[in-house]
Length: 254
Image 1 (cartoon, rainbow, N blue to C red):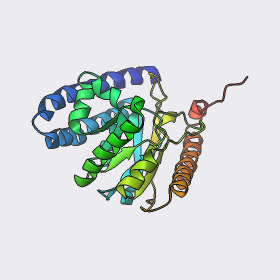
Image 2 (cartoon, one colour; image 1 turned 60 degrees about the vertical axis):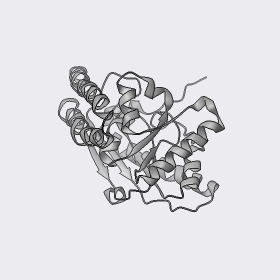
Image 3 (tube, rainbow, N blue to C red; image 1 turned 135 degrees about the horizontal axis):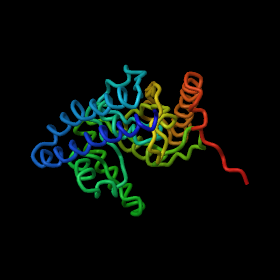
């Protein structure tokens, strides 16, 4: 049953995203505001509907009171492709910091570029960081919330965290509060897996870290909040859906 539901969802969900990318690529040439509305109020809600009623995955948002700030940085866990699709419908007008290579993908990447993302060239070193800060400053001026995954890539639930300095650079340069968020998406949508496992996915937003903290304190507090809350969400999900326990990270034995 999970295979059949996953197959149907992948056809319907990704099919709708493909149509959305084509439409947004065309419309985006003329109006960025139009594609933001079409994407976040049309295609992404339909994608979420497909998740719930075809794949059986419900999305629960906690800490909605922290979603009201326009000028803020949202930093959180990246466990699956799900958050890259649904986050901009949760954080209205939000823009992602993402690797530049993604914007080269025909239609999908073009639509992202026209939407107004912050692509970075990871191989460019310090030049990439300067370019990221310049583009992020422009987003701040446009009052668009910035979304970043501090680890820079997807991590399996329970896997040892590796937080990178990019989020601290944004925090110090933009002088904005950072709102941490945790999730348990990787338990229901495993990395590089065709299958989607039914249950309730949670995105939990937490009290902002105020601007002005020193870098070391900021990074320690950010990681502690995110990892602690993710552990709580994972434990809650496993209690409610015991069959997903095997999706937690298992260290390889020597």
